[in-house]
Structures are given as structure tokens and as C-alpha cells.
Amino acid sequence: MTNNDILKKLRVALMLRDDQIVEILELVDFRISKSELGAFFRAEDHENYMECGDQVLRNFLNGLVIHLRGTKENPKNPNDVLAKHKAEIPKKENSKERPEFKAAPKDSEKYRGDQSSSKSSSSTGKPKKKAFPKGNGKTPVVEKVVYKNGKNKK
View 1 (cartoon, rainbow, N blue to C red):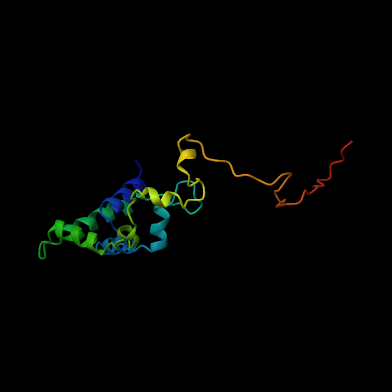
View 2 (cartoon, rainbow, N blue to C red):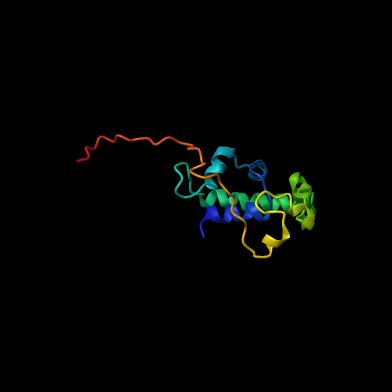
């Protein structure tokens, strides 16, 4: 496991945003920008990927201890800090508004376009084919096009 993996897993587990990680690193007087921090979270094959050094991870862990526990003069309860992080996460608006699936009554099935309304044909289990007028009643949607790719056909 690399330092980048550890940093990613801690960010997800503690529900931290990038600006919160920058603030945690500033608790131990370690300055880093959001763009530098974002380079640690990129995929390894990305061109802007940067490997997280031991110094960055060590300072983050030391700052995390101060962030969660506080100092000797001003101790904190880590559970309260984590609850505060969880409360700051915005709720998804459309998660509760999505209606749950309910079976439609049989009467509404007769208005569907893919099934016929008669009960006798539905007993066979096969949908009824639509009847087209005699001849080729379909109108062509796209004209036939001859592509000239520069190859001579003999």
C-alpha cells in the first residue's frame, strides 16, 4: 500500500474535503495547496499524478491527531469532531424524492402501446405484430449513400 492509498482511504473514511485536509496540515505548520493535494488523489497513470512523500503523510497524521483530539490545553472528543464532519456533508436532494416502484393496476396496461387491449391475444403470451399496408409501407429514413474511400473496385 502506497502513501497515496493511505491518504485516499483516510480521506474517505473520515469524510474529509480537500480544504479540510489543507487546514489539518496547517495545524502542524505544513503549507500545501489544493492543487498539490489533488495530485495525490489522481490515478497513477494520470500525467499530473504525484507520489505522496513520507513527510506529507507524517505531517497529515500528526495534524489529524491534533484535529481529532485537540491539544492538552483544549482537548476535544473525536466522536464530536467526526459527527460535525458528517453533518457538514450536503444531503442529496433527489434521493428521497424518487418515487418507489409500485405495480400498476391491470386497467392501465390497456393504454400501453406495445400490447393489445384484448384479453384473448394476451393469453398466448406473444405480443401481436403490427400490420403494415401491402407492399413496402415503410418510408426510408436515410438514403443509400455510396462512399468513395479512394479504393478502386474492379
